[in-house]
Image (cartoon, rainbow, N blue to C red; front, side, top):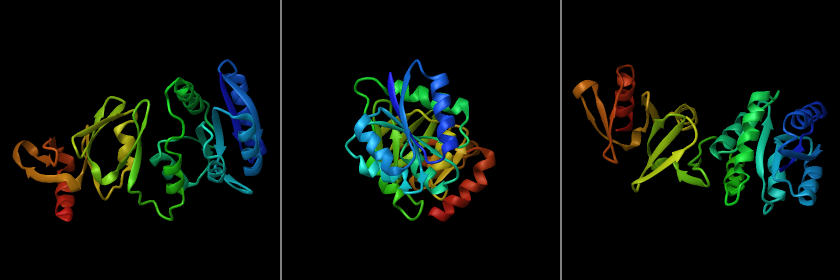
Length: 252
């Protein structure tokens, strides 16, 4: 049974989320309580030791990230709740943390809870990328140099410049990195197409997203192929050919 805690300043949102959890997840989640600000949240975390936080981002006396800084060392998983903070959302995505947009959708809540329940098994780390998340949130821009990739029982924090290419594998994505490294991540290629910097990465085919800085050669035969720094030969779709050549010229 997962022990959960809500930290949310808006009374209506706090009561709604509490009600949804108690009505739909009572068989696998014990809701310990709900805090309405940073100070109260920190006190309840230290006292109750929850397994999971539903954590609001913006509160009157600070942010959800202030909460995290004040309780470093306490182990729990996080599901952020937010409305429109785009900078915070991007930092959260780069840190591979779960989030829910307000008003909270029941299907999305169920998916987030299911994921949290699956994590609650021996050996699975909690908040290993907390420091990385906090660093990203303190940035004044969205030009991140690293990204967290969840690989089953672990988090891998990798340099974006070391990503050679990404390949779709059903609902998973295979990352091919420098040093002959390969990581399988449980998120779609579309997710990373939207997340990785557009100036560096291009979706050249339905199955492939490539780092233009790692293209070493272009083959014109059979419609066109990009030869990558790891030796991979990646097909360029016809509709992406002009964009690829334009971007290739800009990189070179």
